[in-house]
Amino acid sequence: MGGGQSFFIAFRNVEVFANVGIFSSGLIGSTAIGGAPFDAESLFPGMYSSPAKYNRFDVIYLSCGEQDNRIDGMKDFKQKLDQNGYRGVVWQQYPGGHEWKVWRRNLSDFVQLIFHK
Image 1 (cartoon, one colour):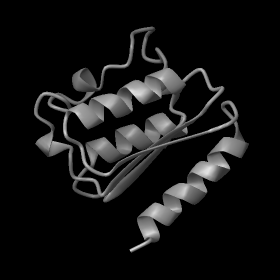
Image 2 (cartoon, helix red, strand yellow):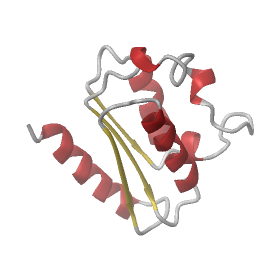
Image 3 (spheres, one colour):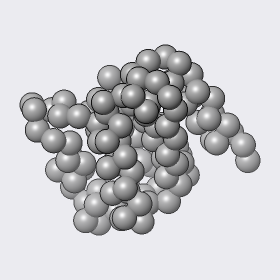
């Protein structure tokens, strides 16, 4: 639940957080909510149709393991953010599935991005 919780907490509180890291989210990468496909616009009205409210992060770090079945949904979310002018969107993928060896690399990359100023 870490990636989904990061998504909800950060996007519900865009005035509080400067960065968000979403690693291998089951919410974004699958049909976790009642079997329905992930739809950020319905969860956060205006996320795609009027993104100025949500486009406040310095870094939106998205990542997934190459063998993780969530990767297509994560890539789709990244593409939608890009198409709607979100800034600071970073995509990383590494060999591996839904597992710690991928997340350790994600954390290392994410921390370097947000603390390297």
